[in-house]
Image 1: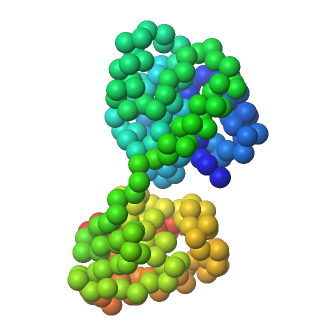
Image 2: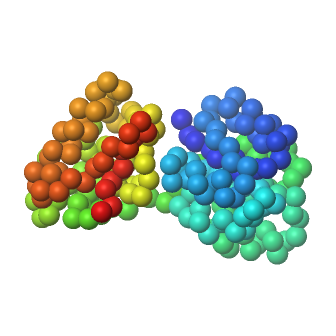
Length: 220
């Protein structure tokens, strides 16, 4: 299911967009300011963003440079051609002017999702861990570490978000497509095995549990 983040402070417009998108089969998240959107992005990266420009606090223009790698459709009442051109040059995938026809917006969403996000980096790195997403291999301190499919998926998600605490529910949701054998009851076991294998390779513990929330990579 594709995830769409609506960044819109107008409740009426946001509710209307969410209702229509959910009916079309999309998962929808909401943010009501630029600051709230930036806080939410590292935790749950969407497949596409619908961005209003006139937001409280940080404006849409302010946060555009921080949305790299995600298709952004600007939804704004601004009609000036220079505004549109400037935002497209800054990385917006599309621009639609308010008021808009919902059929047109849905069509633009479909096109935006076809373009998709920028591909993941082929090699992820954290401390002395190297994870090759193309070859599905993991190296720690120049030693190859054999991981199960579930352990690999967990480590990859943590390394994609090295500064964030990943909640248990989010972790299960994000890896469920690749690892149907991982359940809430077995997650702790998979994490334990992963931590042990990484520790045996270098003598260091890389993953820490955040009590009652989830897991993150240890930065110290």
